[in-house]
Length: 328
Ligand SMILES: Nc1ncnc2c1ncn2[C@@H]1O[C@H](COP(=O)(O)OP(=O)(O)O)[C@@H](O)[C@H]1O
Ligand SMILES: [Mg+2]
Image 1 (spheres, rainbow, N blue to C red):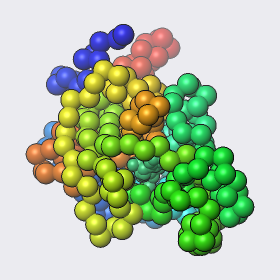
Image 2: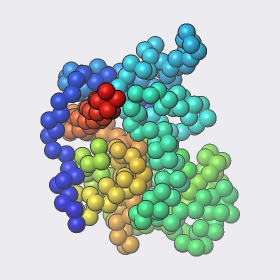
Image 3: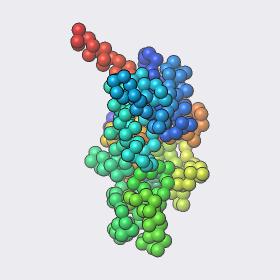
Image 4: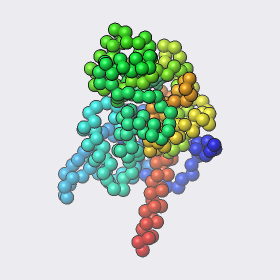
């Protein structure tokens, strides 16, 4: 097996000029985006935190100019994309992201196609399956009859919104097609339109492996068990279950890296559980969060992200220098 140390973050010594960094945040006050921006400024870069709605198509002398809070998009070197694609309306969001991804010379991490494929739970699970990553069997459900068929096949199931985050409306149905299970299903179908249904994989402990720049940045173990079977209850007012940073086993780190590679993301949070059938990837999340961490802990991914941005801009600089030499 490959040496996992090769994939873990070492202090990078990257020589790079000031980077003009844009951080597309889930929301303006998002602590992760603000923390990344602070680290970037400490290191001599400029950083702007913005939301999708700050991105505009403005008139220009030759037609249309893409701007972020009034600054032309073309003035940025690199955009870190942490926008919320877990909620509608995708029709508008995709158009905003197309604008953001359309400027030659501005690197967007991760690019639109990669980001939306990971944000769509069904497409993400499909992609992982194609790459041989262990994931739960997953059935798309549009009616209570669909969920009932899954219960008949699997006994105990989990239903979840086709698009979602933070455990919201992720429910386990352990008692078969009872009246209350079918009522809950109807409520969720009304709310979300499409649900995904999977066998319920009993487990104790959830792992979240944070990958930045295709390397392991950290690994958290959430103490899930019994009624606290999810790291986040689904009620936004609740704290997550207790957790601790751990050193991931080689197997865990390697699975997380393979999962992220399968999605083509360069940064992601990989949710992994250990069930009877071994390590199983539940989700590769393109917008990982660490807002609940202490400032010291949160600084680690913030620094890793800025180092990664520096590496990307640096690599692009040497690529364009090389191609410029080729022209002479
Ligand atoms: N098939 C499953 N079997 C057992 N637990 C699951 C299953 N799917 C999800 N979970 C639990 O629910 C949590 C949230 O599910 P997830 O699909 O990651 O949704 P979200 O995007 O809301 O985080 C997971 O971290 C895991 O603890
Ligand atoms: Mg999750």
